[in-house]
Structures are given as structure tokens and as C-alpha cells.
Image (cartoon, rainbow, N blue to C red; front, top):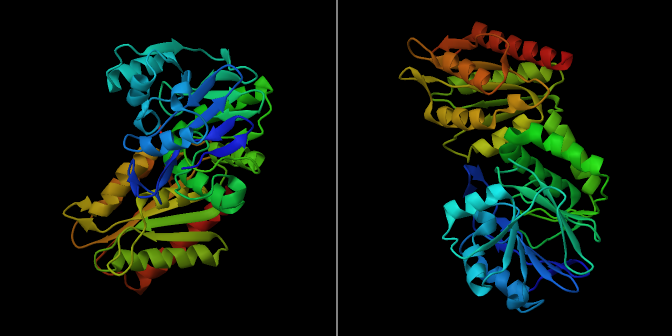
Length: 405
Ligand code: FEO
């Protein structure tokens, strides 16, 4: 197995997980667990490692460059198992090897593994280690993704290793952004951001500002998942700033499920009203008997750059449809209302008795930080022509509000 060179003495030695399809409730076309080897004149460091079960790929790629026993420094940017799964094996192979990490990470590792005899070296922001012509500088980044997280910066080569930040979940033969292509790289980064980073967005914005103020040049961003950014670094940082701020398009995402196609008819008609006002719309059914439907993680990706979200459900035994309940639970966790720019929303659906789904959805919108424009629109059984006219008018109203935002 081959390592990939980033710069003189700097290599990607990670693992490709071609088969992963679900992670954190997120659907994905595989991923990579990126690990990096930095070979200085006096020391060799391994930055991060792999999910348990993927150590073999990493060790073989390291062997492509050096004997793994020559690693004399381990840097752990993050405790989570997708980056630390090989650590017990490495600690056995390299007894007493110093493991550089934050203080919070030491606590995290002790909760994950039997760390008896492990040589932790705790670091704080701007602490450095010299590998001989290669200087690693650490920047604590608590809660990006866990309290233990930190970034590592390789000064001479201007490479930032920010772990989960700037990552993408994709398994591919391409290692760099320009090989995968700008559009695809940014699209995968956007999905990663929409699902995993939105809850952390205020902290990301603060950290970006802090790193900018340090005045350190960044030529390459080497995250712990997906492709390495070398050609589109400024596009990526610009996109991150916009996503963190909640910069959105004149776009509405409609997400719903349907029992007898009444809520479906409402969704289609709302979309027509929105389009009639010249506003973009994305219609996402959650489940479909004929087609695949839309996974919750793809729907929240659409919501990231939408100004409005409409959620529809039939009422089933006084509750929302099970797929809508699943979506609302995930949506609450992501909570796009945390982003600086506000989003508006509305509930809709049909029922066969007393109704009630729109109350649950309207509460759900509020819980996710979305401002409902009304109490929702609910109708009995199948929409008649007057009710469809109301749906169309509601779509137009939402679109006009979007244009005014
Ligand atoms: Fe990729 Fe927080 O782990």
C-alpha cells in the first residue's frame, strides 16, 4: 500500500473505508480516516490514526516510507475512535512513545482505553515541538469536535491539520481537492458541515478568527476525513465563513411524508406557489414506495442554504408520521437556528380526525431555532380545490417573505 506525499517529508498514511454507509445517523459513500506522517531530521511524528479495524492499511502505508518502529512522536488531535482506534496497538509497538494531546484528551483516552504506561505529554495553544526542520505548533480547539480537540500546524510547510474541521465523508481514490474537483469537494464539505458542524458553528467562526489573527499562512488544509485542500483553500474558508453565518439563498426546502398522498399533494402545490414567485424550492419526501426517498442527512444539507423550511406530515394516532418524527429528532440536534442568519418555517399536513401533527411540527421548528410564520396549515382527508388554492397562496406568501429576508 502506498503513502501519498503532501510535501517533502510529509505523507498521508490513512485508511480508506469504502463500505461505511451510516455514521452518526448520516448516510455517506464511505469515508477516510486520515493519518499523517511528518519526517523531520531528528524525529518522526504520526498525526492521528484510524478507526478500529483499519490499522492494517495505515501501518502498510507507513511502511512505504519508514519502519513504523521509527515513529518517536504521536500527536493526537482528537479522542474519538475514528482517529484513535490504532492507538492501543501503537502504544504496544512503541513503548513509552510520547503522545502529544490536550489535557482533556488524556481524560478522554483514559475513558476509552487501558492507558497504563502511556506517556501523555499535554500541550496548550501555541506550544511547539521541533522534529528537526519541521515544527509542529498546537492550537487547542475545544468542542471542534469534542472538548479534547486541537489543531496542529506544520510551520515550515504551512499545513494545517484541523482534524474533523474542514473534513468530508467520502471514500475515493482522489486524495486532493483538485483531483476530486472543486464542486464535488465543496459539496461533500457542505454536507459534512450541515450535519456535523452546524451545532458548532459559533465556535468555528471564533476559531477561524483566532487563526486568522495569528497571521499564519495556510497553504494546505489536511483534515481527518476526505480530500486534502491545496488548490481551493480560500474557497473552502470562504464557504465555511458563509455557512457559519447562515448565509442562504432565496430557496425553500419542503420535507414531508404522506399516507394517502394528501400531504404529498399539499407539498407539490406549496412548491408551485413558491416557484410562481421566482424562488427556488427543493421538495424532499422522506420515504417513497417506488423510489428511495430522501435521507435525513441529505435534507439538512438542503436546509443549510435555504431561508425557509416547510415540514409536512399526516396525523397518525395523534402523532406525526414515524419518518417525520425521526427527521424532527435529527433536525433538533442539528438545530440550524444556531446559525447567525434566521430561517423561517411552516408546518402542513392532512388528517382523518382531530389532527395535531402541525402542532408537533410547529413546536419542532421552534426547538430547532426556526421562526414559524403561522400555526401551520392542516386539512381533513384530501385537499379540495379551495384548499389547494390556499396551499398555493401559502407557498406564494412564504416565497415573498423569503425574498424580503
Ligand atoms: Fe471524525 Fe469527531 O471524529
